[in-house]
Length: 393
Image (cartoon, rainbow, N blue to C red; front, side, top):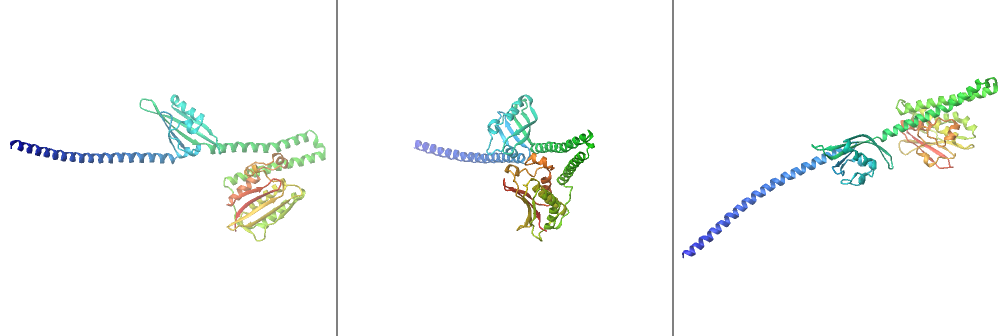
């Protein structure tokens, strides 16, 4: 009996101990779950904060006009912003790649190799080949820890393309102006020296030389006037006096002014503009546009050819006009550049005819000042047609 009681007591104690441990385990489990939930919440919050900081950092870098490149201690790409992707035309994610793998530019890799010794590299110009050539200025700095050990690098790229293009344009402009001035001045100086050496005593010879001198002084005058005109147009100093103009009437003035030149070359001039076609334009500047286009068509067209002025009203609020000739036409490679200052399709022929090389550039700027567009269509051997638009009256 006593053994039975002892067994029962042992079993009861075991059951009680079991339930006690179970309740303790449950309590500990609940405490652990609570702590885990807190830890998960903290971890999630830290992750979200870190992600937000990374997103804000990336957004900040992407908003920069300068290109930014960050490398780790091993020289692998860690961050590239949007501007840098556009500068180099990067189409894929280059993070984790080396400089040579990502950009394939030995010159850029050389800048990185200089950093351990120089720490900072400033003002290094880099030329990037591609569909459109770019010039970039690279400033690089090593990222150091407290012990002075390099842990990475940051590079900032400034786009110098526009500045380089402007500098090239300036140099080309100065060279062209110098050449345009030098040619007539050299001729004038030569004829004056010849006159002084005795040709002045021959009335017929001196008269011919003086007429030539007058021709080239006129050429210098036209060049200076055109330079002043295009400078004022580009700087916005010329204000268009816009009003309702009769296009056929304005074209008639141009045809009358150039009729003598056309007859000298046996070119037929036609004013094919319909009556009562009106546009809102500056009449004087419109005549300048038509004069330059028709004069070029006569000058560079074929003898015994024809030049016509036409136009019509578009379906919108634009008037489209054109000057058409049946001359030799314009090569394909010249169509995109023909409205540039001093650009000539045939330089030798242009020098012979004595143009300033600014006529079509002035046409472009006057038309754009009216809010219009100008373009050319041409086939070799089939002539050329210059189009431009004006606002409807």
